[in-house]
Length: 369
Image (cartoon, rainbow, N blue to C red; front, side, top):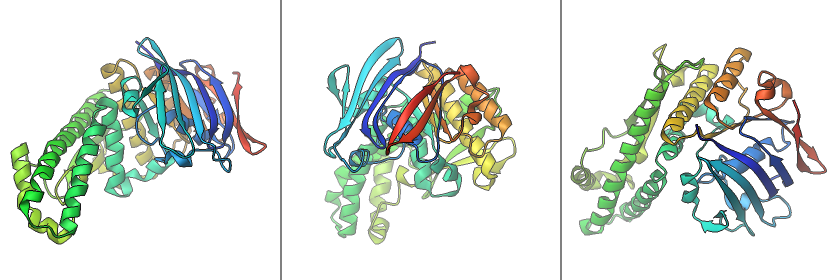
């Protein structure tokens, strides 16, 4: 099996890291340190080797070390499917993030052709009980790991919808202004829906029959206004017929932006939102692992996993089981925790890193086992 991992990572003026460097191998990376020492900042840097705004969804100007605000830079060596790539990602003076791959300027979406990165962070622990927007974002990150072009389709849909919503708010009633926008929305909206359903089906397949200590989640995609029409022409007609209602609301009420991801603890038949905190966390871990197993088959290598404070809400048994599954998957999983004892079950199967705060900056120390 081909690998996907970082063998080198250097941070300059990124968040709390004035200058940090790691030399790595394909094993999982167990990171420990006090709260506020800079552990999450380290894995946020890794999240930027994928398209998007990273695991905190932060603007480039907010990632620079303060108060200097000089800009920041990341350098990495990525091993992907028997190839080695040199990556540079940086921002100067708060400007938009820039990327170079093997010395050549590249768009962010180009990262999706050579890397797959998934993450699970503490803010996701409330995924099942908070708003639908967070669940859509969680699903779309998984979709992009299989279908990198999903990001472009989503942007096209959102741009057309924003323009249509502007017309609706201005109470424009002349249908000629809407035709082109509704055509774009119908084309992109159906593609978004198809991509999402395809990945839900793929995750179900990856969970089925898997020997795992984590409960399988049955996923469904629900629409606030009922199912989308099957064809592009029917979708356009539905948008046209719904203009009067949308004019009254001042926004578009039909489309994938109104979808909601629902999960059920399969073995118990209990909705994820009604499960205990520990069960909700276990369901999320199960989905991330299923995503990883499916990508190992479809992409050709398991993804890089970023698991921030992964031990939270997991008892010792499930924690040990998680480490076993990560090692069996073959993923370079970057995991953070407050103390080295949280990763004792990994032993020499992982490379261990301590992050300390020294003289107002994060210091990274690789620890031998």
